[in-house]
Length: 268
Image (cartoon, rainbow, N blue to C red; front, side, top):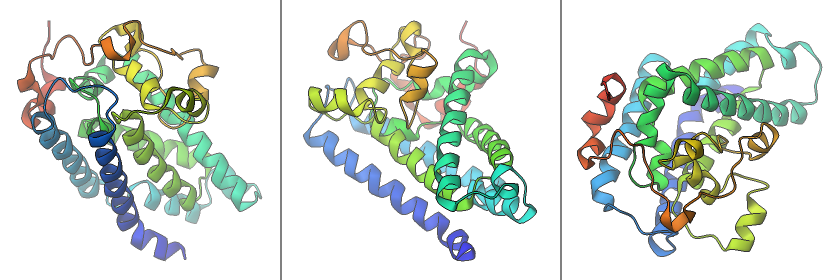
């Protein structure tokens, strides 16, 4: 079963990725939360293009990915769940929760460490936020994130199934919480106790730094509430909020080549 999982892992992830992308793209088209400042054709080619670049770089440099690494850790019996007898379902659930916490802490660090922020700011430089923004990350950031996950997988002894589940959830929730979809207010207030909603995460993409440095969660909102980085609403409201970052407001910055070299350019 484990070898079959590893063999089909790319197909599972790609199918889930494009399936979720298509669902939320359709929902955005018919149930938008707020009007875009730019047309999709100005942003989508580069946002989707960077996702393909990320996938190519990861498969070229680390072809087995996080799931393959989890198999390797399991074979060497490293980490907590590989040395301590634990029911399988507990190790899977605990691994998903632990990896989600690690990604929350990583996200926080990428905002507060200047060198890491230079990489991460490319994600924030999008002038609108929609489902494709959830795939807009610099390839160097993706590689660093993978190395951090490797460390967590080694310490936890996360089972491969748990790692695959987390990776699928992370991709899906990233596209969901970046999507520009209208959710009824009462339902949204309930959902944000269970999962990071688009309204909750949109605050994080505000041009105001005090709002940018809040709501770091991707999957679960509990970490923001626990570590007091939660902000309920933007000061200007969701209709008045300005998205992006101050240094990169020119629409030409939305080109793929500009995005790739953005972390290495001076802005002062």
